[in-house]
Length: 123
Length: 107
Image 1 (tube, rainbow over the protein chains, first blue to last red):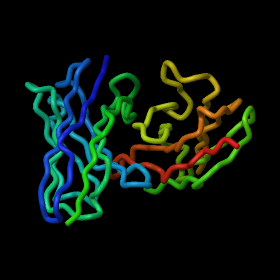
Image 2: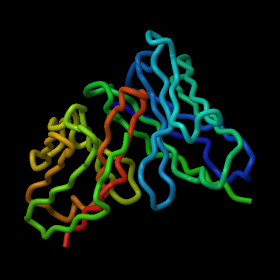
Image 3: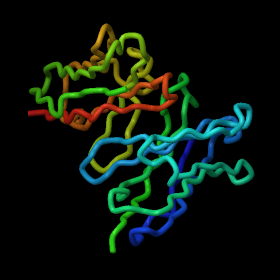
Image 4: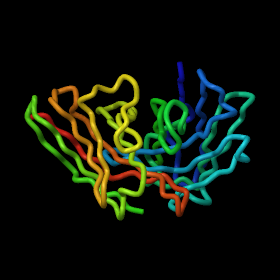
């Protein structure tokens, strides 16, 4: 059974940093493309970025609003994908989800989701 | 690339709910739909315009043509009340794009 478990969220002051983790089980992590998506309170889904698998060079791609502040990386030895967030702003307050791409169905679909971890940025 | 969804749709129990997702020549892209119940993570309900993942009822159907993709839910019940998001992959930017979401209310 595929499971994704995010952790690392919490209350952070503006300007601070945070590293979110997403532990994956039930599939071959090294072959998976992983994404991060966030959802601000009462708002819609916002794509953050993606890391490809080793075959595709573990390349990353980010949405414009977070490019330069957010970094996605993976550790196949721990079956974990990370999201490093720097220079946090109040508008980064959101639930952060990790997802798989095309694991069960086709490419470009986000087919498995974790339950999310809440990041609150406030002084 | 921008996807436009109506903020809300209301439907009576047992009737059919239709939710749209507009985008420039969206018919040339593959559209995926997600259901998000309150307090829960999104769940994929339709992918590649009109394919249901295993476990999703046949009541959920999708179509895509021209500038509009559509998710239709037949025989709606209270359990279908949720937010629904459309999503595409924009090949020009290599970015995932979500629509703003539609809140489905079952009257």
